[in-house]
Length: 237
Image 1 (cartoon, rainbow, N blue to C red):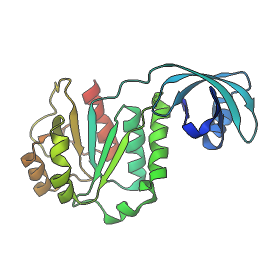
Image 2: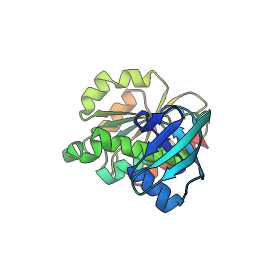
Image 3: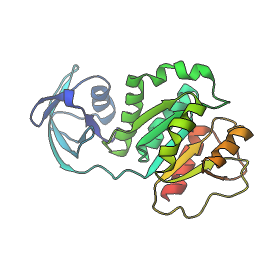
Image 4: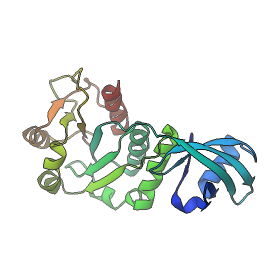
């Protein structure tokens, strides 16, 4: 945790907050901070600054905060990805959030197990926790948006046209003949990532028909969480 993120419910007075639970344990056991120490702090969907610990007990810490900085700029990428198994979903959300992604769109596909959509990892509180962990890592405060579309056909019909109109759409596929473009420019990108094993040929063809450039990172088949980080690295590099 490189940033102590504070939500509205944490504030007990103007410029003063009380923190318990996971964040308290991290401050005590990992940061090993004490009364009088200064921490980097941020307010969810707000500014960044610093805070001085006023009290620290086993139950809670109280901190006096001052906000005087902006969070990092978001990256112009919407990540559309086939819903992976829950442990992988957590990695994707945390790592891509840390890299600056502000919109996640999880979709269904032929190779997506139906049981994934009933996972506890998709509960709002679980999603929020993973997104917050990504923000804390990157010293960011702007909470990303998460959308879920279990039915791929409904997504293509009802959501894809609007997303596609917002930027350049790129699908990464190990079987593609075209290599990853060296220069995508500064325009927003809609990055589409398939499930483990990739989209089936009929799905890839539909993505092409829907305006996606289908490109390859190379001959190796990567895990979803690895592919996401590698692709974002190409976009941001």
